Image 1 (cartoon, rainbow, N blue to C red):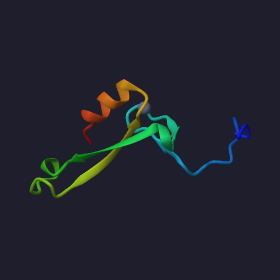
Image 2: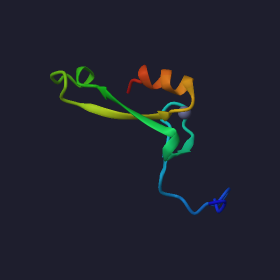
Image 3: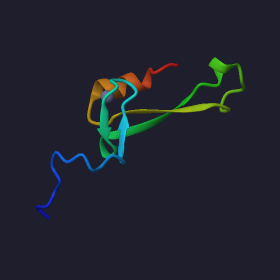
Image 4: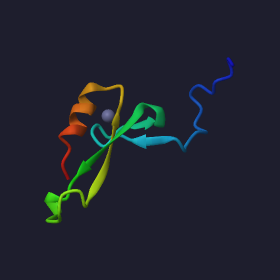
Length: 70
Ligand SMILES: [Zn+2]
C-alpha cells in the first residue's frame, strides 16, 4: 500500500509486446485473442492457432488484433 515501484525496471517478467503497435506493455494491459490460421497453412480449420497479443486499453490495437494476419 502506497509502496508501488513507479518507474522501476525490476519487473521484467509480466510484460508483453503488443503485436499490433509493437510496444512493450505490462501484462495486465495486454489481452490475447486466438486466431485460427489453419486456412493459411492449408490444414483443416481448427488445427492451427496463433495467440495475438494486443493492448487491451487501446481500441486501435484491439481492432488491429481482430484483423491481424501473418
Ligand atoms: Zn498495442
